Amino acid sequence: PSALEVHADLAWIAQWRGDWPEAARRWEAFRKRFPKSELGYTQGAESLRNAGRAADADALRAEAAARFPAPASATTAGR
Image 1: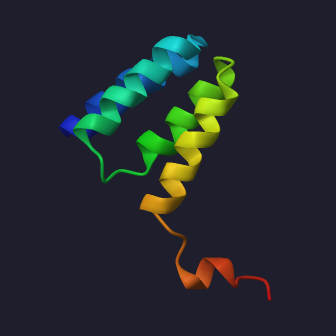
Image 2: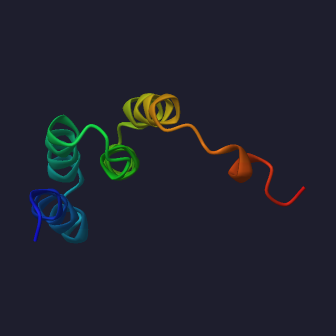
């Protein structure tokens, strides 16, 4: 497995256990190591929300939207 997969698995394990504060910490470490991976932002935000940190989750989602804008085809789908 790649380093990205190993670090993601560590964060997933915390999520699967329901240890949301630890999952949020692990996704934060993942984002620092792999800033170009959207996964760290989406799952980090989910972990933050489940840890009771809704404002931090919203801020991370906004950062993700700025870093990873949806392709035009995705925003016009279904029209």
